[in-house]
Length: 283
Picture (spheres, rainbow, N blue to C red):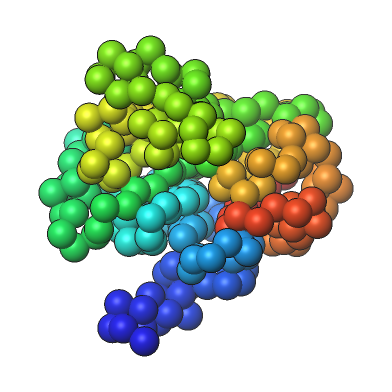
């Protein structure tokens, strides 16, 4: 086993990364009704777990932030691991985070991607998608994403997608304007330059001229209609619709049990990819 692999395993055991099966839960100190739970399972593909997550409540000055994220790596896990360690720190360092949160997040995404590209020698040539959610004082949810990991909120029993799936077929014009192309060969999935099945990602230096790391950002106020939000990698969404995911856990009060139920359901539906899931309950 290499030194890098040993370090990877140590981080997983400490709760900093991912392992074959990782699960846990937590609660807001500001609002006892708000809780989160997560569950991750390694897929049946021929590589080690490439998903990473963040799920924690953090006090910043007189505010409480719920920080939640799924990072789905490809061509290795180093970029996803770097994002887990640095992206939220970079977002919170932005001087206008509290006043212009959406702009601050977009800028932090771009700065982080630039750093990842500069560190290619250490991090490798791979990349990662990301979906992040910041819950500010239990009242305001700010979701950002690049790639196809997804955030879905349940309001009055209805599933509402907060993130945007960045599919190459939907962004063909932008990719072609940058000098790239979208092809279904090899295989039957549209890919940037025939290689990557998402139109936006962190890293991927060899494709970066044709890829974007610009996130879509959405703001959702948490009112009495908001029940919970699901963040998950595409290993879940490939086999389950938004409404199906919401319906399957709406009666499960424990957030960790809900996240585990969703991953197990995706496995039963023959998902072979890594599956990472976070559920945040508001009531």
